[in-house]
Image (cartoon, rainbow, N blue to C red; front, side, top):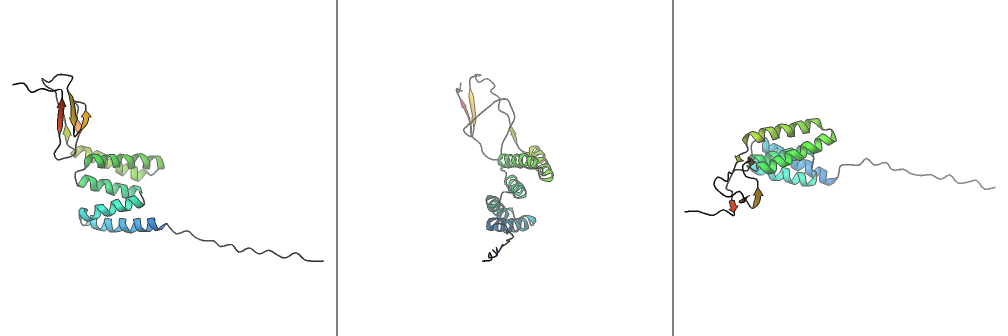
Length: 158
């Protein structure tokens, strides 16, 4: 009578390392932090952005938003802070959500506001700010710098 052969199985257990992109993102983030710590935003911000493209964690997004704010891109910074706040809140990341909320509040204190009144212009006048229609007589947050305001339907009267 034949004996059954024992079947031996070799199991290999591998501990997964973070993906290469995560390692690269971490290295970029660390270099960017060191540059930001010495107020070298010009070199730090592109590294934060590269890191965010590879691994968009809340900390990296907060730093990218801070860079945007530093360079006067307040609206874009605010939108990113809001996104971080929403996503961090949904994920239960309380500290990141609180930091994003604090940054939004601080940004709102320094962001320029524009109010356009029609004055004697007809109520049918449509107003655009940088090519986008806006509601008149309300405060609009804007980034510092030059802007183009266009009032369609307005006529110059001598």
